[in-house]
Length: 72
Image (cartoon, rainbow, N blue to C red):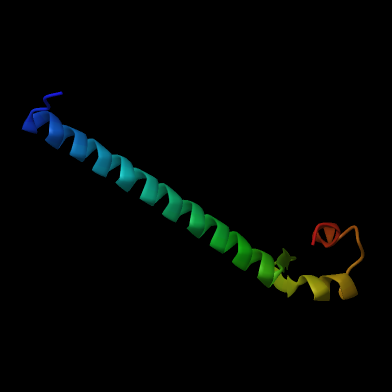
């Protein structure tokens, strides 16, 4: 099958753009998962304008005021 150089250049350009799109997508996903993991590891809760750790929240506040205790 004969493929002209113009068609070959178009094909290469499309393949390159597709690869670029997927690499940007996977970079975005990896950053999202990395930051989710960082947020989970910190276990920080904002209560009454102050930043407290969940452990401090467990000790100092009842379950009704510290709703994240059930999920962490």
